[in-house]
Amino acid sequence: MEPVTLDQLQASVGKEIGVSPWREVTQHMIDLFADATDDHQFIHCDPERAARETPFGGTIAHGFLTLSLLSAMTYETLPPLAGAGMAINQGFDSLRFLTPVKTGSRIRTRFVLAETKVRPSGWIHVSYDVTIEIEKAPKPALVARWATVIAPKERPE
Image 1 (cartoon, rainbow, N blue to C red):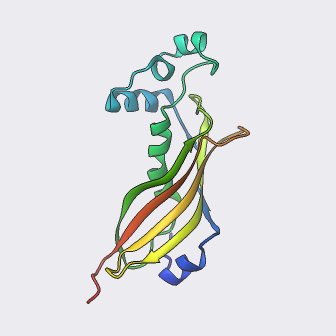
Image 2 (image 1 turned 90 degrees about the horizontal axis):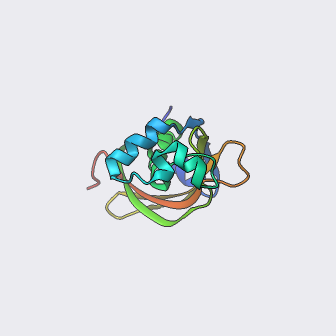
Image 3 (image 1 turned 135 degrees about the vertical axis):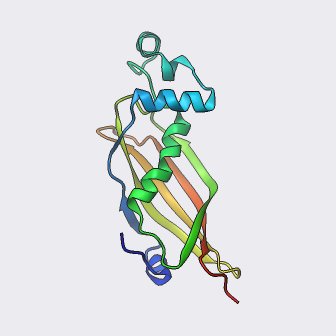
């Protein structure tokens, strides 16, 4: 992917700037996430019990697993900023989990550039409105306003 300039980035505020490829959420991914976070609740890790005792028909992904896939989908989708050294996650101004992601579902992210601000330090604040969609589902898995900062490779004088 070709880098974009700061001017190109700023001209894209308010526009959809990318849609990630579809990504399958597997039971293996869910189990690894459960191990990493110590969250082995049966709705995530026990397919038979989840099929019996939940309205989902089986296991569902942790909401935070779905959210954490946002980083990978960003790298797959958005071009880098020319002259950027690194990007840092600042968190979320808003976040809502709307629909559970059933095991075996495919998800993707739509990115709308919500805001850019160049700080006096040269760091660039960038916010995205993100929507993680579930293939063939009427509602998305989540919607959020995601805040990041981008550091320049070289600090201004």
